[in-house]
Amino acid sequence: MKTLTFIGNGNMALSIAQGLKENYKIEVVGRDMKRLEEFEKKLNIQVEKHLLNDFNITNKQLILCVKPANIAEVSKKFQGQSEVLYSVLAGTSIEKLSLNFSTKAVVRAMPNLAASVGASMTTLTGDIAYKREALELFSAIGSAHWLGSEKEIDIATALAGSGPAYLALIAESLADGAVKQGLKRDDAMVIMRGLFSGFAKLIQNEHPALLKDGVMSPGGTTAAGYGALEDGNVRSACMDAIEKAYKRATEL
Image (cartoon, rainbow, N blue to C red; front, side, top):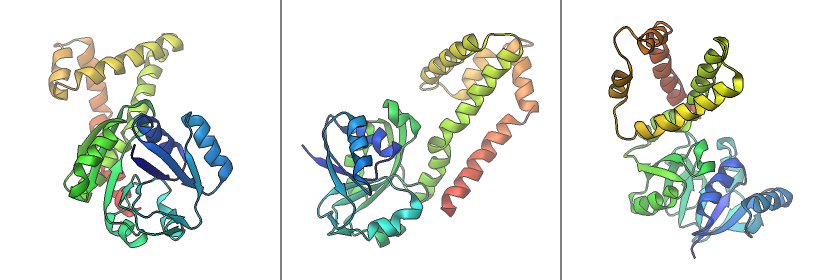
């Protein structure tokens, strides 16, 4: 069984490890043994635990899950040269990763929050020799899609990486709107969750515009509500959110 070495033991590392633990041997490297033990307990399997100082990464497959600001400090703690470095750090370029880590290959990966339930939309780019392996690896936590450039993965970070926060805002707002009109909060939440669950299946095989047209009859309730969304510049605000998030990704 192949070993994957997680550098970092936060929530994203845990989410990814949950999806991979059945098919890979997991080891984790961090600063604090107590936190590493907590990681192991949450993962509910035995893992090899190592402290950062002088850890030998020779020929290992690394999954880097630390904060972008910490890579220079963390990279100095290792010995040897890894086989491949999979980085889930937003906005951190292959060039920067290669300058800081001694590794034969680099692949950038951008999972999202749904990795914790095995439903991440993960985008990937980097050393083409590892395309097939990277797709297989990250498909274990949901869907995975290879992109042709770092610019594209930074844009995808704004869409898929940050997207759960935007959808959460819309979900909360729709439920609040129903409560405002007199629906009980618990009922509004049940209905909203059912709405998103069904929509997730519909959108897999239908263009959003066609879905909208299929619901919106002339002069009907949907048309009235849709007009309010357009009046509120919701479409423009969503497009601006992607632009701002993408620009921020390039600044990190």
